[in-house]
Length: 321
Ligand code: ASN
Ligand code: ZN
Image 1: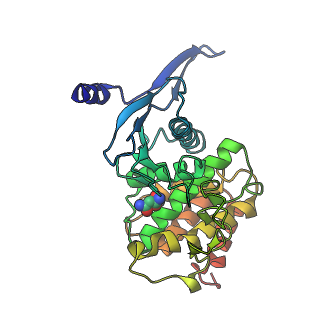
Image 2: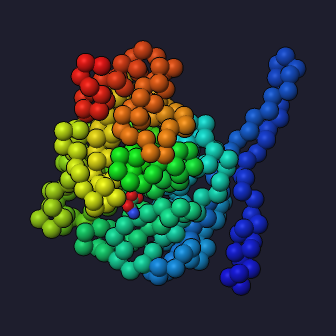
């Protein structure tokens, strides 16, 4: 039965879009394509076997399992951000179906993108309450899918920290877009609400003030730098990809808050266009900063000035630039 269902799943159409034809006032034919997500949520039933059993498919009504519904809704929010802000149809820009597995492992304290799907643990209940509780975490994991298809940024050193940072950007933008928050109203936190009350901390990371998300007796202090002078050279974590991402994260938050308004409209578009502009998979912070500046040039002088100032502020561009 399982093999049969996999065949059926593989046979499901990858596209879930409709073509609407109408006649304009001048008699011309108007064709509008509207894309919609094709989501499948699986339950690993507290094992580490992927993908697990299918528990909710596109257009199914919500069931009793909150993690399933949170994953389904978070996938939908990310899909809408990509489509409406960046005109990107799903992760690959070609309507790829979205797959997520919940209840992965026992007391599993993480969420990840495995190259094909998002996977969410339940958390151990002592440090983490669960990983589907935060839309920015869901958007982050899906963001890895976008980055993989758009640029293939190598998950090591500076290109790895850029991979992490762009995933954070897509995560917080998904949350801001869903909540209808401007750059000034946003918390700029990644993973708000996933810590238990026992933890002294607000979230996993702060994009606007890297290094201040938590300071806990057990977990220690948030290790993220917000400036190149504090760049952490380490062999751990693929060269500190979750640590040094604080630097480009802050550049994005500074750009967006300087410009004001909806972060996805100008700062987000500059970052998205940089990501999809053909950057090297081994791009350095400077390479990526140059790409965002080139993208900003098409979006107005104020955007260009804000982008340049932000990368200067975090020490990626030299002061005299
Ligand atoms: N939550 C982490 C991430 O998406 C998981 C990991 O690093 N493997 O970056
Ligand atoms: Zn990540």
